[in-house]
Image 1 (cartoon, rainbow, N blue to C red):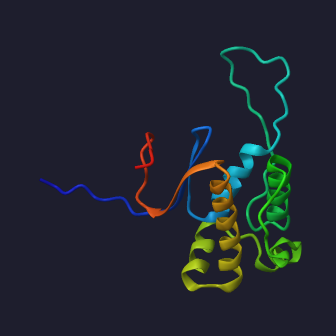
Image 2 (cartoon, rainbow, N blue to C red):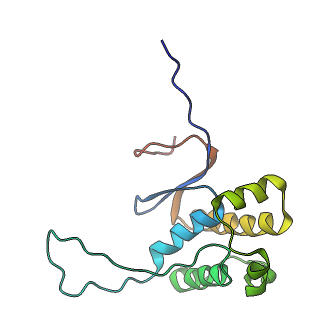
Length: 154
């Protein structure tokens, strides 16, 4: 009988109070998905039942110059406060210096310990933990195997 291969750990998984779940390769990507939930959506004009409606939203990718600033503004708009984020991480020049990193590049920089990327990802993780403290994120797992759809706190 063949052994079932165990899945590799997923860097970040979380569940929000609305029941939605997110799986991401980095804290910045996980934060981007959370931010997408709070961006105001334009209402659909004359919605038709049983029809597909495509709604376009513009969400900045992590490492774009204003990403963390927009997240902090969204937190302040939603919760009336936001965690402290180092001022230099909010400066557009910080991300311009790093360039737009894709998933694999972020992972490589984290493994190498690139100081600027580690600091940025830590700030994103700190924000996700802040959201957990406020009850917006109900469950947060880091470096664990993929959770099922019925993910419950044990």
